[in-house]
Image (cartoon, rainbow, N blue to C red; front, side, top):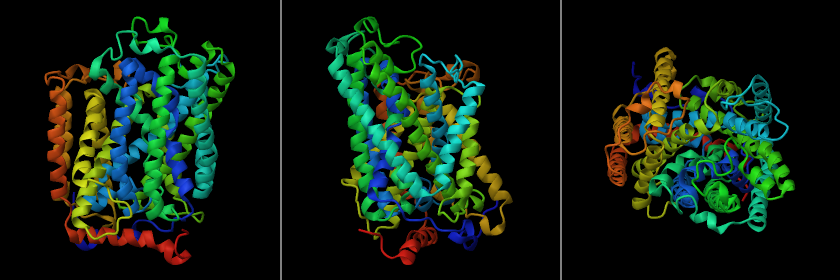
Length: 569
């Protein structure tokens, strides 16, 4: 691939897209955007998948996930308040590591965001298909029927129209949905705890932790981390916040705290409401084989028909609200890809309503591909979770690098105990990816390779003014990171959580070894992660290239303030 000269590589926002985003989102809007992303299909289905893996100890899984993601959220809070641009998670690595380093984080961010909206729609359709009406949306293997695909397209089209109308429409529509999404889980917790709570369930079916620590860790990528992800959504619309330096970190931190508390209480209520005979001999099918609506099933068996009805209504609103947000999020990320010069600049165009119209339509079309006969909700969750956590893992490395090459920037929020928490957050992220299992990581790496092929082809054919300087040294830490994580996973104790039907795996899962003893694998991950973190900080891109990138970014952050006056307090 031909590298550009430094003059060509200088980043000019006008070269990679035109138009200006509108700063219309308040603290309330940012908070509800993050919280609305956290509470989606994960709350309807996450407790069941976690309990099947860890039994009653799944409650510990939620606490561990909450602590891990809280540390990562604090890292994102500093980045988001210091560099308030839309599509932030796709752009922080670009500032820190240049074109190649930034593309890895950008691609992972976009892949996870563009697939979540259709996954949420599939969850809604599957939940509705489990009612007595049986509308015929889902096949027995979990894929959508023809009718289900048409209804799914209608959902996606509605999400797209709302996003096209503008960020204020998105924020206000989400606010209404999120208020409902908070009320129903709270009502479910209270109703199940009062109506039926069997404390003996917490020691049934093999004890509190029937599969020990292994089951607790394995539960994290099977719906737990997926459910709690989304705190970064306030960062993705940071370029549209009225007062980003004041509000972004608050929205990230508060939404993470509220989400963790709700999910932990939901898991406790779920375990306590199960009929004891269902878990007397194990946790493989705690509410009966084939049930897709766990809380609705429990509410019905407890005589709470009114709650079951509300839950089936919520099966449309909660995942639908999250899907609405992720159409917006994925479009901001592809907007960032266009603005950074990774993909055609048309993706960075802004409409007269102040939204990335081309990116919104593009993400709608890509999202529709997920309705083809791909794996079901449960099958895709582990893959998407791994992509999300790899995206999260770029943040601590980016923060460490930016603290070194941009030390004098005003930081409205500063990560406390930075020298401890920044590398610790990378350890946490790598652990979650490792727990996803070798088969998941294999497929994820194929997606990463495909992304780099797309990037290379575009850079080969792009006009001279759109070619990027390929700073190989600044990205030198990424191959050892990904390869090393893959090798540890290949030799580790989490090999067999397949993300696809067995006919799709091509025997890959059979290649996984289990030679590294349990607990030693976590020690190896920790030491490996520390080495990668300090390597990444050392290889941050040279200051002169950072200054080129930040100049255009600061222009983008400041243009609305110059035009409209200071942001409201």
